Image (cartoon, rainbow, N blue to C red; front, top):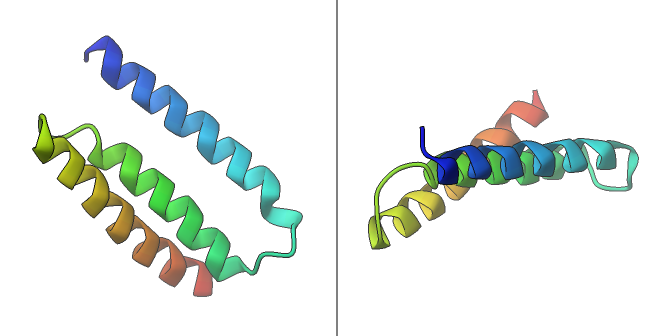
Length: 75
């Protein structure tokens, strides 16, 4: 694993921890799930590809993660 991937995973973990801390706020559960899923998906997607492929993978990961996070939070 390269240093860049380790740093990306670390930033993602810290971001997720900060978002979880917002769980008592006025935002509903579905929206929280979408935010958390989108951030996680973007972090995971950024680990794949190179150049513009990495950008596309990050965007796709964010979209898929947001959809999945919203559906998981509804249940």
